[in-house]
Length: 409
Image 1 (tube, helix red, strand yellow):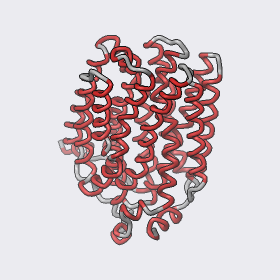
Image 2: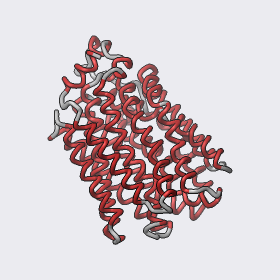
Image 3: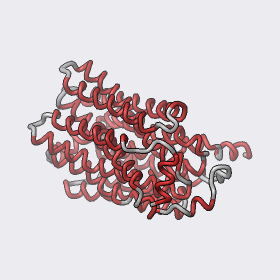
C-alpha cells in the first residue's frame, strides 16, 4: 500500500492523470465536429448555423478563462479541475438531449463555462509538481493530449455514431468524464513545494493586475490567438471537409481525420524536448519557423487535386502547427512564479479560446458564402497563422524580458 501511495504521488504519474483529463476534455469537444453533419441533418441546420453552434462553446469557454485562472491560484488546482470535470460531463450528457438550434447554443455555451477552469488549473498543477527546468517538457506532454484527443475523437465517434447514434454517443462520453472525477479526487493530493525555485518576496511582487498591464503578456495572448484560430478551424471542419469535398464516407473520413492529430501529438512532445534543449532564450524563433511551415503545408493541402497528397500535406501541416504550442507556452511556465501561473495561463488561454469562438463560426460563414467551397475558409486560417508569426517576432527571448516587464508594469 505504501509503494502504491508513493507511486501515485510521483510527478510523472500526476502528469499522466492530467493528460487523461485533457484527453477526455478534448474528446468531449471534438466528437461534436464528427457529429456535425448528422446533427445538421437531424435538426435541419445550415453550415453557418453549425459554425455558430461550434463557436458557442468557445464563447462560454473564453469568458471564464481569466476568472478560472484566478480561482485556481486562490483555491488550488485540484478543486477547480474537479468542478470543471463535473460540469462538462453533465453538459456533454445534455448535448444528447438537444432538440433545436437554440437548445444546442445554450447547452454548448454552458459546456464551455463548465470546462473553462481546467486549462489554467492544469497549467498551475504543472507548476506545482514540476521544477521550472522541466515545465516546458511537462506542459508540452500534457497539451499533446489536445492533438491525441482530436485524433482519437473521429476513431471513437464514427463507429459509436454508426452503432448508437449521435445522441447516445454523448451519454457514453459523459459517463467517462464522471469516472475521471473519482480518479482526480483520489489521486491528486496536496502538491509539494518547489523549494529551490520559488522566492516568496518575488511572488508577492507579481499580481493579476501586473499581468494585465504587461505588453509582453498581451503579445503572448495574440500569438496564441493566431495559432489557435488555425488549430481550431482545422480541427472543427476537417471531418466535414473530407466528407463533402474529398467525398469520403463517414468511417473513412473519421480515420483520415485522425491522422494529422496523431502527428500533432507526437510533435508537441518532441517540441517541448527541442525547445528545452536547443532554444533556451530563443523560444519565439521555434514558434515562428514551425508556424510558417504549418501554414505552407495547409495551403498545399487544399490546393492539390490528389486525395493522397492532401492527406499527406494535412498530416505534415498538423505536425508543424502543433509544435508551435511548445514555443509559446514555454515562456510563462519557465519565467513566472507558480503562485500566478493559473492567472497567467488563463490570460494567455483567453486568446486561444476567443480564437476557438471566432474560427469555426467564420469558417462556417465563409463556406456558406462560397457555396460549399472551403478555399476561402482555409485562406482565413493562413492569414491567422501570419498574425501569430508577427506577434512572436515582437516577443522578447529571455527571462529578463518577461519577468522584468511584468514587475515594472
